[in-house]
Image (tube, rainbow, N blue to C red; front, side, top):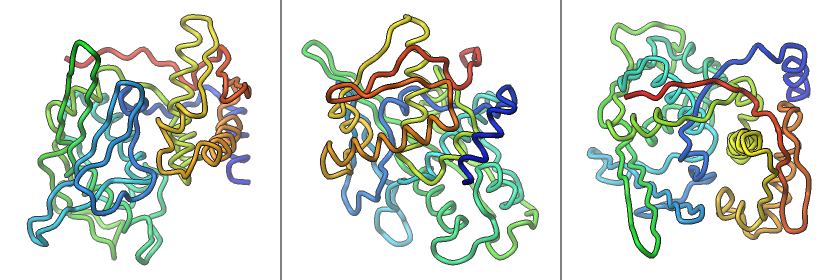
Length: 290
């Protein structure tokens, strides 16, 4: 019902967008949906593009910090990218109030317990900031790579018991130089209202960013784009047991996306889906950051 309500608000006022951005590379290959566990590295493949994540190291506990996974690090990446583009500065100010920051992400600052949004936000913020993300591309003639530390510096003073209290010190992270360049060079625009509507599902968030980017491509060349379930499974759903199971989950997610992004036009085809020429959910001309 909440999804239907948000969809109604978007239809009544389609121009009242809340623009956000995500790096094009992170639309093509995404973060884990579930915790990969205690492994030294985790990868996702899309054609000849491979995304690899290596977790940071906890110096105090002498163990890996863990991987960013699920919906919260995705929302963080949208927010961080948007702030980096807006300020043109790799130093990202998180604000001096925890509740204010959580509301900007569409999270609930009032919850308590191990599964509260605060606990998960704090944990996933550290996991994402301390991780290293790599992109590699290989062909018969070349092999290229880019290793990026997300945020080599930062400071957080949030108080879980008093989320609305302002701190005396600023909360901030300093993005790595290569990561900052990567997320600001060719970002994909999305609508933050839609992200908040789909925030319960990492697959829906991934497919929404991918579908609006694909819709933009169909609008440019005037041609539909067909994608097999096998390719989408490799790109977004490696954690799902098989392609058949993934296709069911992905189709349900696309139906939800269609509810809040009515301009998206798609249909089933044999072994996959076809994105028909559609308008992207939001169009913004973005200048490249030098």
